[in-house]
Length: 380
Image (cartoon, rainbow, N blue to C red; front, top):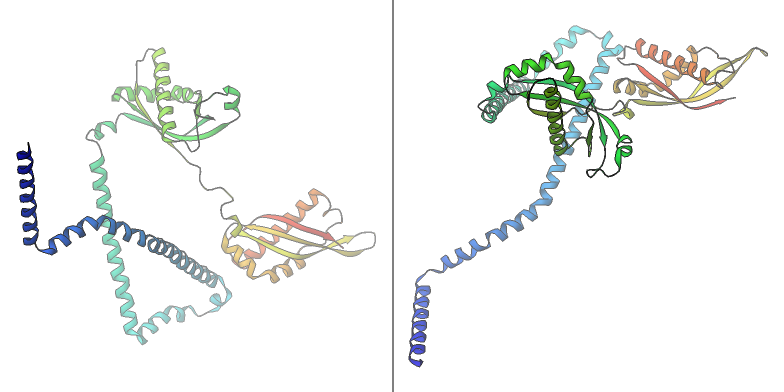
């Protein structure tokens, strides 16, 4: 037994000597390279962690610069449009304005040529990018399109922007019909109904009125709005199963192969960016006519006006003094009862709206006053 142990120890010593001799033969740079390769993942992680703040700052700067220069360009465009509508432009010599760029180009040929070349290069670059992007998009769609698409195009019908009443509730139900009725909503869906063959498609087109009625009669429930992918799948399966059963009752077996739904999300609300189209005008003086004394007294009011576009609001903000003078001189004295009664205040608001619209029209400003809101009213 001791003999075997000694042999094992001798073999181990021999292996250690061989490894040491091999280590002495191998150059040191190989060991450094192996050590570096093992540390690459750790180095990459640390580098990425250091770059994250810089990337976020670059992202925020990009958005900030884009918004900044977009605002500047928009301001220049508005200024240019207002100049075109101003009296200065109307009275200016149009011929000299048209020849002014050519005179500048003649006096500064290098700047003019460089500007034209830059515009030409940018136009060519953007046209090449657009053409290539268009080709890539078409190629990608053709690659993703299934081989049987030419057949499928002929065997489905679509119901665009179809209105449904759905019940909003939790996924588990549990509260009964009363809770579902308390959360009823209207949604609009595009319904794509695929059939087995063109004959079934023709049948569904003939039965489109029955199809609409049966879809409107369905009791549908969702867990959230806009509807999730799971809700769309559940609604599609329920519609397909119910409609196939309805058609089975009239002797037509399984005409619908599948149903695909796409929710139509409502557009922007009417109050979107409404604050930018609002203007407040204070200390407007209207005269009150007193019949018993045959003299006038005054009504002071502040009001806000909602315009149809921001251009009209900007113009009114820059001409508040002219607006006050125009209203004071053009609105006739009102009866004392008008500011007190609700109907009278409506008459005053309508009169102010009419006069402001005439003011904008006289100054050739595109836009209208949509609504007048009286913020403060006091008689003296």
